[in-house]
Image (cartoon, rainbow, N blue to C red; front, side):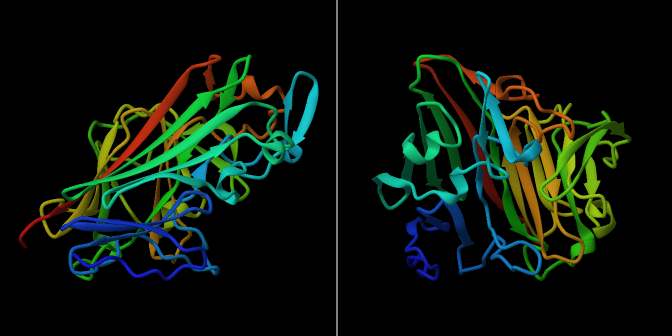
Length: 306
């Protein structure tokens, strides 16, 4: 496969093999392109009318915070929605044709938002028809480090012209019968009520009206994998997505847009009335001094004969 073209403002890092190619911007360590053999783009390519991003990394919070700030040891710190990592330039600390690793470390700028010493690494690995992404957080502080860590990957909807949008579904590995959560705002604050799930057994049939009330948040999800593609997963091109380390999950789009965002999370958006210390934020990871934790998202291309 030819190397993918460099089409972004900040020169992306490019990795490739015979089945897939990917381009990742050092700005935010954001996946900007994921192409199948033949050049078919699988990733949403951004549109300011709907959503300008592609696949931002969410750290150290998911969603906004009340009054745009977090609290630690009686002090308040400004925090942008979805955290600061998506707006920072990472350093490339490793690269081959099929793998690259980006790193962001605590500095004077991050400490103004988040008073902790940390190392955040994001790795991208291509193997056959699979892209594996890994976010690793190391606590380099002398106290416990609280952090939300989230993926927010926008895929084309539809993936190919073989099937229209209305024939697409997400099929979970397990039946997902538990109630779901909704929010308010964009990004959302989490509302307290639980609502009946729109999933029918394992299948969530995608349609615009599902997202009139913004993202669907699964805070009691059982599955750690799903298939995204045509309603019949054995007809055409689909993606198998695994998130073995993430206990929460969301799916989102804006009605009329041609993307769907698949979002495995460690952590949840802030409840609309949450003003406590960051370490008490629902769902947040708490990493002990000197320890590290990692979260994977694995995207596998699946193609079937019609």
